[in-house]
Length: 285
Ligand SMILES: [Zn+2]
Image 1 (spheres, rainbow, N blue to C red):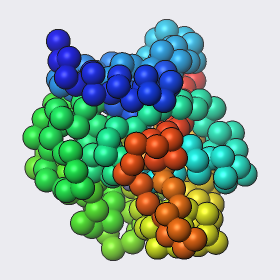
Image 2 (image 1 turned 135 degrees about the horizontal axis):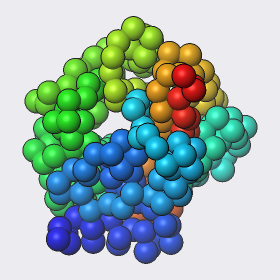
Image 3 (image 1 turned 45 degrees about the vertical axis):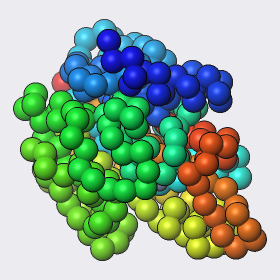
Image 4 (image 1 turned 30 degrees about the vertical axis):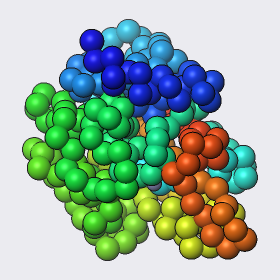
């Protein structure tokens, strides 16, 4: 139906020989929650994730609570380098889905695709710019179906800006630390069904000091620790719900010289990322 949307994702799946695209996240989360995919979606619900949830929930019950931890620029080349941190993420999540990004592999373009399921040509952001996306997103689908959505992010970042003007709540901060604290608070003390917690730290540092600098390593470690913490929080505060925690980077990154990093190119270092899914069924009543 929306061929342009699908083709824009398939192109890079073929080039990088991945089964999944980052654009598969929106239809996958929607499927888990029993909701229709965004209307311009060109992605495919990931069978491995959907089947796992089906088995765990014994064919009955859909995912009720979702937290998406969006750690910017922590892609496959980062996984290969920061092995201990990513093993921690793997152990916590269970499911790892190697996915290809879209071009250009920059934050607003990629998160635009991740949360609409649509190719950049369809969602409209095709370069580094941060306009409000006009087509239907994962967030709109949730809101339309009576669900409460929150986005916690540093102010002025892509995720803070391109999904505005929707029936959802925006929590905008000066630091990652505050966004992270906010996400934890929201799980404990509110009734959100879908929470996005964005972390810019690794991306910010990798540009300035290189993808494998000491400072970058600190941010990769912090991202893994925060992911584990969110899983622990979720098992306490959301234990009565079928729940999903996902680790959702947008792109990877590469070194441009000894002390600087970048992304945006059509190369494996930038284009390959892993989306991790941790699925838990509710505590029996
Ligand atoms: Zn990014």
